[in-house]
Amino acid sequence: MKQHILAFALAAAAAAAGCVGFEHKTSVTSPSSTGVDALMGSWQSISSAPGVIPSPSTCTNFHWNPTQQTLTTATGSFSATCGDIQFAGTASGTLSGPTTVAWNASGTATSASLPISPCPISLTGTAELGTNSIRVPYSGTTCLGNVSGVEILNKH
Image (cartoon, rainbow, N blue to C red; front, top):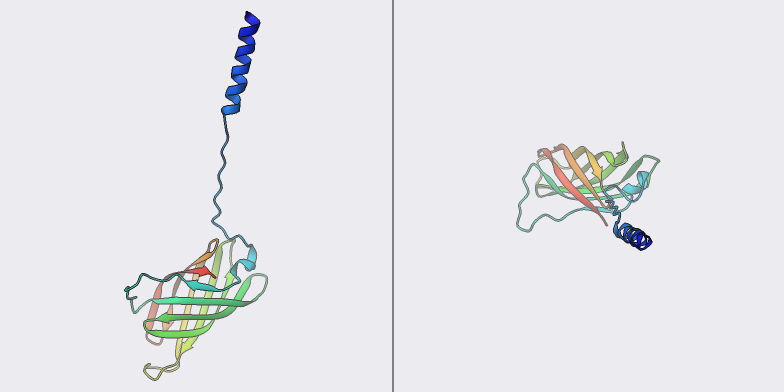
């Protein structure tokens, strides 16, 4: 009888051990590409809510298309809308950490309705690179005054 109880206890212990599980979850928040390759591609602002009028001291509708790269930088065409003025020029980003990008952009807008034509723009900031997005805090100047804000760009 003792042998049957011992065998039953061992079988119950083995069955219970099979029921114990281990669960491991991971979450990817950093870019799937590494190095400057993570910056390459076409980037565009996430659309803002319909009917929302941006502040005159902010810029929206960012587009960045890096076409040149070195080991740590990517450079390409850039455009943004500040107020109701469309600017175009170039922007470059330099990796300063695995997901940190020091960036700058400069360009101009040309229009007879502007107080200064061509109207220059200069923006800088430190962006945060995500899996398929870049959070872009910026500050800078245009011929209409200072601008600052945050844009989220998605990779397309």
